[in-house]
Length: 231
Image (cartoon, rainbow, N blue to C red):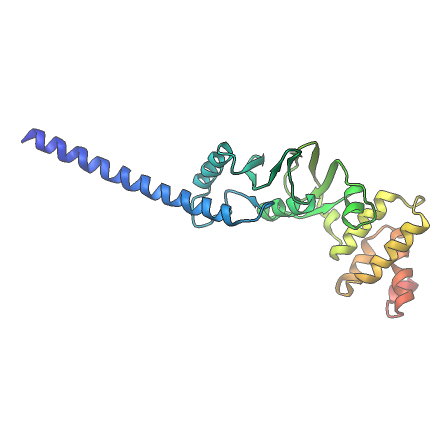
């Protein structure tokens, strides 16, 4: 009968939506379980769950913000964090910056007071942490603090030694005529601790002259193998 056909049609229409709902519930369960198992301070992005569609994951993560399970730092960046009466407990700034850079497949480099703090040359945590980036410029609020990514040209990332590039940024922040004896000694200790031989010769050629002299003098004192010390 016509009624029977209509009933069967309704049933057939409902089966896919029910299966879809069950599948969606399963995906939400998987994502929530992984977030529950993650440590506080873990960042999540829409591509943190590559087996699922990014847009769909982003929708789920947004819902988890509404459920107070995650906290949104900025568009597409979510944080699992402990919340105390003083506010959220954020992970270290450089941890957040590195995670975002990895997500964006971008290079970053702490600069200014941020470089000094990362190297331990300053105990003062900047309220405005600045990173040069090969990716997009943006600012992320962490309570009263800010992480700022400044778009930079490729030459800013030319120095390949990881610690060396940080030391160069720190010296630029201090300034040629403002380096104290204590700062000089601590920087020399860092240069000796992280000689990064593989890229030394090329990196020396890329430094401002006054910074290169510090590296050459420090490393030549440690070893006479660097021919650039006499150039």
